[in-house]
Length: 625
Image 1 (cartoon, rainbow, N blue to C red):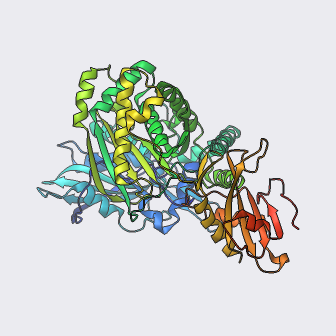
Image 2 (cartoon, rainbow, N blue to C red; image 1 turned 180 degrees about the vertical axis):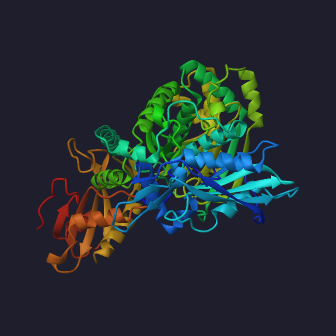
Image 3 (cartoon, one colour; image 1 turned 60 degrees about the horizontal axis):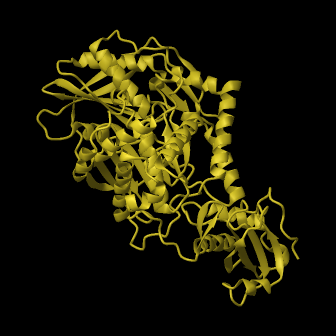
């Protein structure tokens, strides 16, 4: 994973993700009017960034990732509403929420900061659509998102109003991710509607935190303790997790862009209600458990590790917070169980812990991730992302799962299930599942990298989730029967594949990475040998199934030979995107070239210049000779 890239979950979703359909291309409508929205009455102040803002700033600094630096918002306007009422409601929102009137400074080598304006203006363009067939959402979103935003000089929000015959019917906002996440957009929509109905309305509940208040709270002793606890959780979870779920044989067909497939199943929704009634656990958790089981089956793993977005609006003061609270949550669900209901309960516990420990300093977290990777010889690939948007609709979230219906109706509804392939998208993950709706109909959207999850397997994975839920509706499903019920099974892995520390590793892929690392030091050729099962107590790679030894030839002077630590650091630097490669548990640098590079016996005939794990914290290997 590129630590500075903006994966979909870290960004909190995109405009395309929020809508399972697609808008066709359209040309921007010419503005027929411009209104100046004046806001004031707030306070002006400055201070440090919050954890969430710092996390966003990491990836929007890169020009390649600025396309996902904003969040679109679409607010319907009731018939008969005046344009003045719309602009006054918008002014109230900007005054109420400091994040909407904040600018940022990011000095080179210095500490980023934010400044809240007490008063100011925002230009709102008005566009007439009349009877045009153009989609005002896509037209105005494209118009507002054009050009690079200036977070230093401009407000983080741009606005436009769509009208028909002069009457406003839609407000479109494009807001910087520094100012909002998807959860914030939902809150703003609710408050905008309330202000149109009653300009004097205020949100119920306690006064929400503002970003500078949150930044101060994060720096208190209690806030720092929570952040340190989050780092400990991530460290422990990563150390015991597969480095990548989709360490699988790649598809030989030419790679393409990730495909997006939507899946709609009333049968699955009916099945979920039966599992909820039996377990007492919510529908969203049941979907997560089913996805975990099916993904583990498809990849041949004992655990399903996914990254999700935590809205972090659990505590009372943050429930009405408008700002970027969303950060990654790391979920690890152990699917080694006798029955599906057990996995449902484990998924609930995993989600609770992951979301509990999802507020952290991103820089500190990456130091933890790097430390775990250096010790294990792995990378944090973040290859599976799971995002549940079904609870963002507060009206839908307030409705519990309906009482279980007829099993006959459920089976009959299987004929209604629809899968739709949508235009290609590009996301830096192997698989990204978005849960759009659970009540009444299960609606999923799956983005997949065709190299590890070809189209045929995308369909079978989504169908597998449905079949698992249907099979678990009548009674608790024995997981020994899950392969037959879902039609899913692990891929065929040849003799080049070994299991190390819970990770599937291909020796050929590891050798390719080692060759690149050795070449950077002027060494080579190389070989990667899988040793027999580790002896008890051998901790070079966690004391698990198999150990890898990496050999590298050196033909220069002995004093200039690369050290194991050099090879290990160079190896880790080459690991990004290489799901099936893992650093050797031991490095051996030999003088001269072996006659048979693929034969370990040939390497053993050469003098050893250096030997060791390459891990600074590990015990050194045998002394060089």
